[in-house]
Length: 469
Image 1 (cartoon, rainbow, N blue to C red):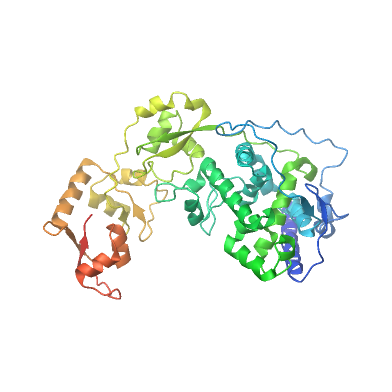
Image 2 (cartoon, rainbow, N blue to C red):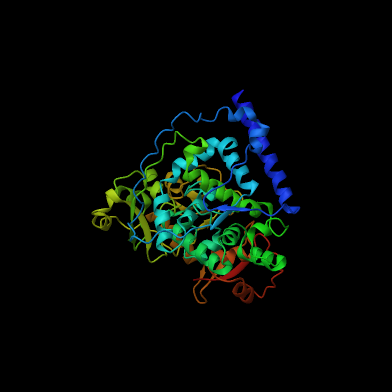
């Protein structure tokens, strides 16, 4: 019966959100404003009218809620004290969509939202201090609440990652390294600094936190076009037009609703929260490639425990080509870490060895046999959870002594010594682009050397000359 009620609640909430969004695009009456931080609650909400039995389960007013746990210490390195954080919204309109999202989180999505709130204290104090340090409203920290539920490991179907759900291009633009070895969008410390700078830039561009948040969701270009077409910079007026998608129209109300509950969870029925302890770390720089398991041992941790603090590392070692990389070290393990790190050997990765791309017909066994490496080691260094391979999947081949001699012998046979070119035999799935990427050259050089046109179809078994690097 309880499952049936939750199903009714969820379905009703989705229907109500769709109806509200439709009303917003058809010219709903202008919203009135109320003092900042206060949301005027209607006498009876839409969910209450639709599902009255749910409200009977809300905590009785006469029952005193459990006291909130003490605020955890700030994460990461302590930041200098700054003046009080500026106000995010000077006023919050009495918009029905805000109350609808409050009801949705409070009732229809109660269990999941509770997990988000419990997880929030892992990095929330650090995020708020970082924003204050940069002169931003600390309430912007709750953007992470609706983006990822404060999960550094969150990954969307569209490719966004981390606490702040950065897309790859935006992450790189704001100084985060994203490649086959590392994804710093998942580093809660570095990504928070990048998110703060990004939000600051958006506010500088639009001079409105509502529009800045809309741009964070939809992109600067779409918001700039919407403002230009509608002739107004008032987000609450823009959301009543068709200038925004339904997601962007509801993004700010959703964020306000989540922030309202997070600041006073007991009022909205979240009375039994078990907040996670704050994650307090120190950032240390590493100037060479080392294995993850060796780093974990230097911190007296298991690999799983190490990755809980450092979800940015997605392979078996730190990147071989970066001159330096930061590692989050728990504060209790930070003392003496540099000395322990000095005894950690380099990973032995040869960055000049091309990463192998899986071809049609390949298996882990055939690849291990071809390169003379143990199957178990091939699985371990690539952190494979399954033996199923995808076409064109990249695999690192560990450099054992026999594998290295085999690779060098193979290179010697293939290289055209007098000209510095490699004779490559076309295999199924090859293309000029893939060959250029694999051998670190360009399509133009391959075309010029082989007197080919770009439209030439490569035939399996043919030979093609490729410049060596």
